[in-house]
Amino acid sequence: MINNEVNLNWKGFVLPMIIIASMFSILGFAVGINAFFVPFVKAAFNINTAMSYLVTTATFSAFVIFGIPSGKILKIAGYKRSIVIAFLLMALGMLFIVPAAKWISFPVFLFALFVNGMGQTLLNAAVNPYITILGPEKSAAQRISIMGICNKLSFGFAPVVLAVFMNTTNVQLNDAVAPFYIISCILVLLGVLSYFAPLPEVKAAGEDENEKDTTSVYASSKISIFQFPHLLLGALGIFLYVGVENAILTSINDFAIEIGLPSPEKFAGFTSAAYVIGYLLGIFLIPKVISQIKAMIICASIGIGSSLLIVFLPGTISIYFVAFLGFANSLIWPAIWPLALADLGKFTKSGSSFLVMGIAGGGLVPPVLGLLKDYYSSYQQAYWILLPFYLYFLFYAISGYKIRNK
Image (cartoon, rainbow, N blue to C red; front, side, top):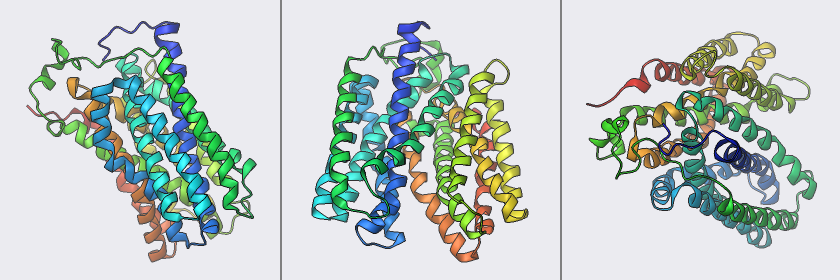
């Protein structure tokens, strides 16, 4: 998939990998901040639980609204400059939290998270295809697994960092001023460093419209990303994946409380640990032992089996299978990206932004799970929603990614 012959050495491969890994860590930290904000805004702005989940909606709605513009920015500015712009947008969003705190304005707070979400949208649209293109296509899932570890570790680190500045048991909005000035400055600094970082401007095969490449013959006959069925199906896969991921992470602690388990907060940690184990296996096994396609088939199958066990086993046992879904999920995202971006040629950047729009599933699926939980008065019955998701992942891994228009 590499078109510009990036050298697989320290400067051409390893160093860019490290730099991009730091960016995945920033994305994980940003999502972790959202997880911290849900209980924070409830107390700080004296709002109910439903209103507090607008924090998630404000961020994830940006992935839909700013998804296509992100693709246009990528095409005009390239990956490197787009990364710089993304950091500046995220910094601006974090900076807006300061007046929101000073004015005690929940709408301004949501606007701040939306702007930050715009930055996350553009950064996702840049770094995911970048890490896919940076090395051989057959090992793309391996590289994305490394990025996944950085992302998930930073997710858990964010609440810890904010708790240093902010008392979660006695919320004071003024406490949000200092940390978000600091975070904004750090993001601006990262943007500047990204501009000067030795990141080669990689391109997928056929992405250069002036280039003749036999690998992009399929794309050369197309005029729109909507003519790529495997991309559209991949975007749906991303939507479902991020939806199920966030549904699990946001519900498992409540599920533990529902069934009366002690120390319910530890179960989200079990889920994150399961993710990391799955990512580590992906790093060591892909592509030498198994292909990224087979890894996705295995993970989807584990997800199907675990979903059934969650519903039918006693709650005190089934909750561990909810956590185990972190393992099932781990190699699905890393596989969908390279499969969905394959053969896009000059449409690679637009296709990437379209996939990023699917991340909006993280803001839509968890509330549906919550509605089902209220309807059935049971998380176990609500978890039936997970089964069709994993069936879809299995379909995409077996045949969905192969579908092409003539």
